[in-house]
Length: 96
Image (cartoon, rainbow, N blue to C red; front, side, top):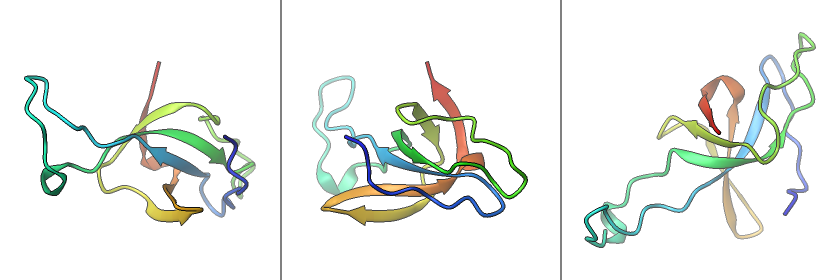
């Protein structure tokens, strides 16, 4: 689904990420209660800014699965779903 919102870059490129769902159980099969689930640090890019104030285009694109800091970005609820808006330099890696 395409998100009908585009971030404004300002001095650095901005991206909007849909966080992956929190892990429901451990690798050994133990279910994790909601109160103990960690914030996801992986998500899918759903929107990117055109270019920053220096004319640099973003390195990530819509659809990329990315890794970011656990507390990176600002929560952005839209139409009942939670997204994160963050600077592109808050993204650590693109998952290939």
